[in-house]
Image (cartoon, rainbow, N blue to C red; front, side):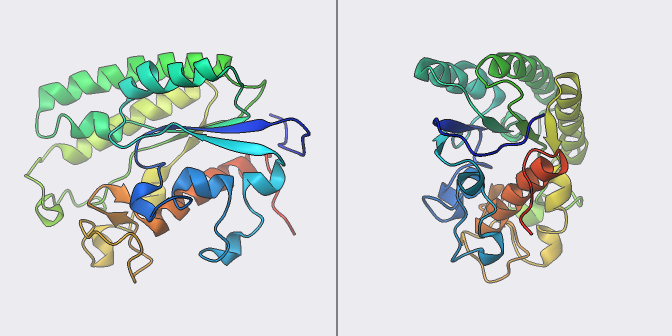
Length: 252
């Protein structure tokens, strides 16, 4: 893969998927994960000053198509066609999906199995199609699904109904995402691992509604949404993956 360097012509960062990527739950415009990858908020995260694509890729523009409640089907049948209509190519793509596919089946084992198959089918179609909408060698970052229970499966403390099989399904869905990444030469970003210890393990309630809680170790609000600190963690996972792949360089 080539390094993202300066360019004279417009370039585009495309954000696809669900609410893990959007601004709303992180506190508003410019505060979500994709927005931070595009342009850091230096007042909020001074340690990230200059570590964003706008600084490294002059003229880059963000196309934020990720949406609340988005599923793999949403990406395939709504977001990608919308981007295709724009007639431009993406220089980099972020994709978060799978969480809502699973949540829509909550407590129903048969439905979860069917949703996993749909994730695999939709995911393959998405990754095949998105390559045709990208510049040559554009990096595509695919995230795994996180777990606000921090591996406990304690849905009661999350104000959810019991589902003994939930942890197993999160693992299976993440295995599907890993398989898709490996098969399609996509950069996998293990958001599940990055978020471990930042839900119930903090002693706070992930169901709380503050997008900027005092405890910065808590990455969630509304149970499943990334708050401002969670959004920054997702951004960090994307950025570190790009650095590790040699696509962007850290400043000295």
